[in-house]
Image 1: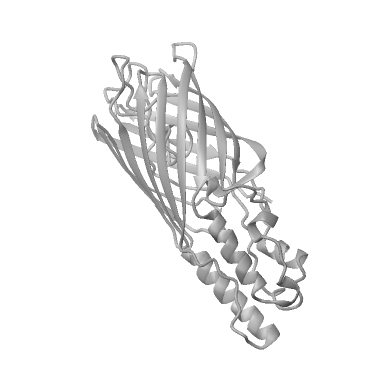
Image 2: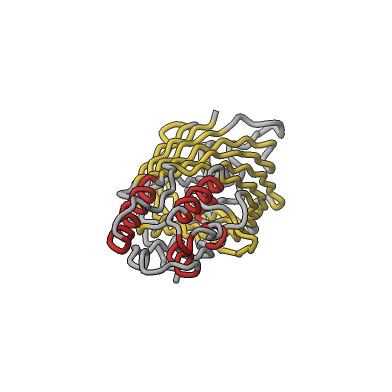
Length: 336
């Protein structure tokens, strides 16, 4: 069952008001490399070229740190004119906690039930890496009465999910007995591919009220599990996302983002129970791999027309197998 992850995030999420702000480097880049906020893309292009040519690149660094996981994102994007954007992002999820927890829990369960033997479940990996590339086109320009509207298509490639599946499956089969011919672990759980696509349809509007107000809505059509770090399903899901922000100053934004997440994967425990587990691993802790929705509250500041610096705190719910506590978020975004 999905849970809503309540967060308090001071994240880098600024906007491109039409003729409102004196700063040209907003929006910044999301964790997946699109012009937008922290986790939700907007219908604006990053560092748009004013003369209709190829603009200068925008680059960003995101770091999310919690008690259980560290996630790093390095996106870069470039715009052609003010309607077309291309970008790529490298993403890295530290799963050393999953490796240590799974090794320790499974060793203890098997030792208690089978009297030793040294067997355990093992990822043999400390990190999961991913590459995301996208193209975005703004097909409706923002006006006084109409929001900007854009569509983007992203290709995502999970670089380590096949190796993770092989390592988990080999460690299960090494237990022997009924596990010797067990099927692939992640395949059973619902991971069908190591790459997949996302399509985003977004609308963004800056309202020229006394304190300018920005609203953004995005519909994400995706195959990704855990942002794509745990591969992709053959099934697609449609998930809404929202941003609401105010600009108390021309170089300051305060607001909230909400991102629905799909929840498609079975648990490791379901796999073990369905594939001949006897008493040995019935006592294993819950490795559900559930996904939670993201919510963040943000504040960001632009000290110069090219630089955005922000820091924040968040709770994004379950990441891979463990419920995270507070996540600290840090971001630097620079438009060349």
